[in-house]
Image (cartoon, rainbow, N blue to C red):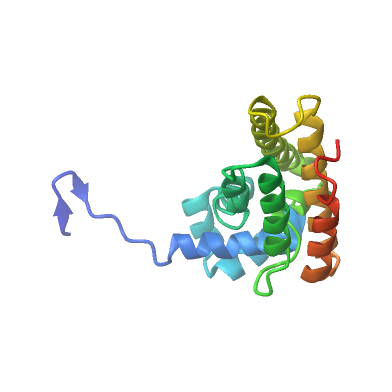
Amino acid sequence: METKKNGPIGRPRGFDTDEALERAMLVFWEHGYEGAGTARLTKAMGISTTSMYAAFGNKEELFRKVLKRYTEGPSAYLARALEEPTALGVATAILAGVVRTTTRPAHPHGCLGVQGALSTSDSGQEVRDLLVAWRADGCSCIRERFQRAVDDGDLPPQTDPGLLARYVATFAYGIAVQAASGIGRDELQELADAALRNWPLI
């Protein structure tokens, strides 16, 4: 057998792990954690159960990798929005990003981070907790950005940055739920615009 200096050359994986992870993300996004059974996942990923476990770990570990991919991909609008020069620009970009991401024709509607584990059995408790922490982290990032806006005079001094961040986050999650229910992009964008019409509302 051909060898390297440090031992035998391992057999290369017979699939593209990046593409398999992308497909797994779409399955979890569409069906949620509970609905994404192993058979459904492996069929979409085009691999065997053995290969899935070897490459990604168990279902929960796969979901954690998928959530990271979702955060850095479809949900990356949040990180970009936080770089807007004004607090209103931040809120506008967040809601516009949610509308775009949750209504893309070629992707499942709704938000993986919102609906991924709203209803799970006891075995899915850790995933439910993971998504609660994921949403809380997003809200915390918005709050910190709004606090900076208060400190810089971009928001009135009496503004409660935590409450304002929770308002924007809650509205964003509501948009995601409405999108999953079939509400169209134009109507959702109108709702987003209306929510920010009297900025700041709090």
